[in-house]
Image 1: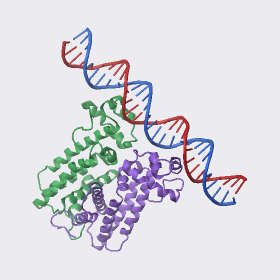
Image 2: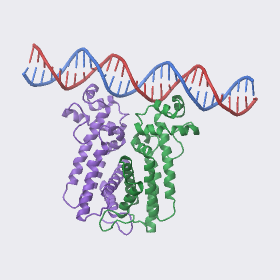
Image 3: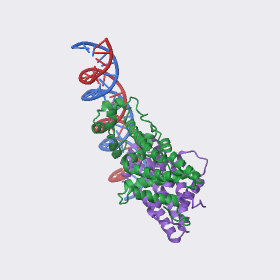
Image 4: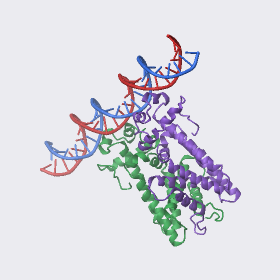
Length: 205
Length: 205
DNA sequence: GCTATGGTTGGACGGGACGTCCAATCGTGT
DNA sequence: ACACGATTGGACGTCCCGTCCAACCATAGC
């Protein structure tokens, strides 16, 4: 999951870690199966035999990269999750941070879902998503309900809704070349999620 | 996309259409690349040579299946989209119908996203999602804003939020063996999406 | 009943890519 | 100088894909 590198048997030397990162783009462009090991070797400058010396196979390289991305996401979201303020403040922070992460890690994030099936057996993505993304959301929502800054009936469902909103908004941001900034997107999403779509509750800042 | 069968060059005989459907489960279980053509031949009872007679390749079979699923989803959602009532009523109908569809077409729906990358070149999934899912949502939202049954500022963003909420809730429903029914899930999602999470607008039916 | 025509199928084949294996080389600590 | 692990080039064996073709039906028109 998010632990350093569970997928690698032999410890990967630091200098190689760096070079393996260059494989991310290739994976993102072609997907797991269309990516040739030789291509990875060329791009990273690491000989094929050496790659196999450290990784059992292609997908383990991908898993290694994905778990790194997950780790980075953990760092980004943890900051927002442990920030001071009301539950609502933290919720807003999480949403903004998450959207920002998607926007800045586009290819890899897309990969996370495109190759979900393949990598799922190596990294438990579902569990990772729950720990890294949903759990902090639930925590913020629970706190918000407690401190009065939010009104939450079903915390689990609310976390899913927020996550879904952010996910789809983020994906759209990646696909559509949009004039609107990430901040504007985050504002729109938050306005809806907080204010709701029913008329009696007018949209609110 | 949702048109009958754009991916097949030769018209596929009706009796074969039926048998090809049996390939769906194999794809859903193994993913595109782990699925062997021979396996498909065995499962469908259609000889390998015949499969290649009708389909240019493995992924075209998948594309064919996905576009069928898309077509079915179109039917299901169209009914909800054209139902009488306020914009809000239609929005609720769309959400319930969509969640129900996900719940009943689990494997194939999962496939739709797992193999997104591969099939995207054959069926334009993004365009299909927009036409089949997002457009009806936008329409309902727009009507709701007009007839006063909804309060919508940014229709596009709202449609994304609703879609994301349904998508993630649906996926969770597929993954987690849950005691809660689809209806209960839909209720929870709708309550949040309509009522919002801010405290001044209490949750509402 | 005969014969084109086109659908249907088995089986052989070439090619691409994966992952394995090994022997040769390199680097470094002792 | 030596030992030992890391590193690498290159040769295989294997799997599976997609192609090709020749043979085999089914049937519609003559």
